[in-house]
Figure 1 (spheres, one colour):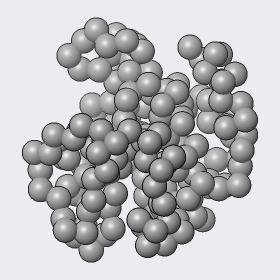
Figure 2 (tube, one colour):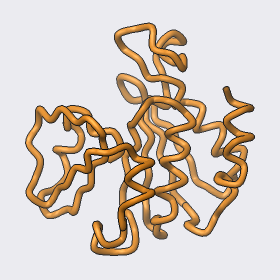
Figure 3 (cartoon, rainbow, N blue to C red):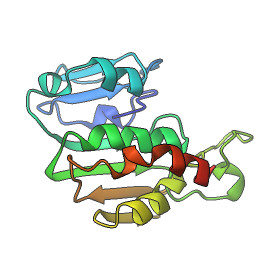
Figure 4 (cartoon, helix red, strand yellow):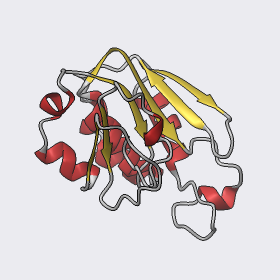
Length: 169
């Protein structure tokens, strides 16, 4: 999970599951299992410095929950980094893909409840990666975006990252 915060969703991992959390300032309020590890660093630092395969004990990520900085560009970068470890059965989920109100969906936070502009990841992936299977679900309070069919060898998003950010800002 990228963006653990208080650990509410992270704590739901099965105790037999090797769960990895990434958050520079987690404020855990929920218990986590002994098989779970939280890395207190940014996701960019984590992917730049950690041996993900060794940490997982296998070459692929089965499930990833992306709920970090609430900006589309960081969420997209997290997806790019995670996709390198995707397998044929991997499922990646983005939080905050279906904001309930335009004000909470803005890039800059002005409200108590805020989803940021993560919702932009869905049209970006549909445009630049039509090979992916993408499904959004309007769950309370701010929706989820499910992605399957990842290709760990794809460099399309990474090669076009700067242009994508300029376009979607």
